[in-house]
Length: 491
Figure (cartoon, rainbow, N blue to C red):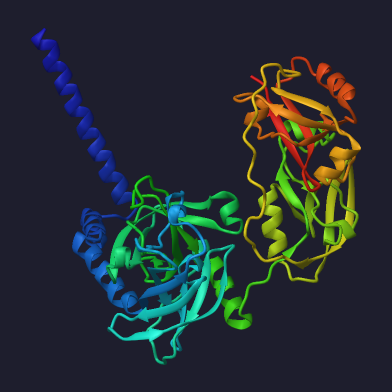
């Protein structure tokens, strides 16, 4: 047994020697001497950054960017309850505790030009009646609001000064996940605070609250008061404006969001030039497609495209061009449209007054139309009625969990309907598929899986024909004549 083990060890030793000789022959054959190989290894090790190198980089960025970062103190006329502070995402605006008629806050900003233009957040400066800016050298200035854009949460303010230090807007389109970044600002009023982290994610879509913004996500520590401060790369360039966080406590939990500099640059340029931001729009309420809705409309393109759920005004561009609720937009001037958000963003970037060509699908047939874009209305306060509480009813018409009645002329008048037929939802059972889909009392249903429903009898017939189907597409009309599509998913 010992002899066999000795033999195996000797054979392994011979193999090692042979491999080493082959490696040496290969090095000599390709012109690499042992000295060259050793030198290359030494050079590679010499090029590797040390912790001291990284530390010096951070120090250099601080010296470069900090002089352009400002603290902003504001006074705002109170028009809402401070309970809004508890919603998520949480803006970094630090309101005071005592707010009888006015409230004071603090935020951050960054100087973009040597003549005093400062970029910050709309929720910092947009509604302020007084703005005081403090520079890193201790000087204080009263600032004026040049303009703001609530839809991107950006604002530009200006102070009367010259030869100021300023920071450069970089190209956020070149940013990659995993890059080191630095956040600067005044968290909790602590001026000139600097924190570091990485780019956690790119292109974050946070829904309707930020229609035009695909955020940069970072784990750099940012807190209330950091709002409007810059997020910079390792070249000291601004690649984002810190805007919001996701947090259960109100403080940093490692999930912060910055508005990309590519978008901030566009907004900044428009505000400085015109005092406001203008965007084009079609005059439609678009929705993403679901398989059930696509099927009900006879659409063969899967879920790619933007569904026109409603056309709110007959004087808008889409209505004038003959577009209708239920049309599915697939192209804008030759550019393919995959989602409703992509449609809004694509149109918003086009000039107001431009005539564009739309391709869309109606009842399974591809069509086109020329549309002259109008200016997008300003974002206004939400005047929509609050959803009514679902009324539970022990007996409902179907497994959807709703009961309906035929729309009468009186109901149509009271609800201000555009279509005077259909069935109106009388009750929605809690925890039912209809409740999960967002159906509420007072909603009128016009189509079930593309089939026209004009009364309760046709409703019952349409539902009965769908036995075993797990997803049901409905075209509905809300009070005030607002059309929409919903998908009800059955268990």
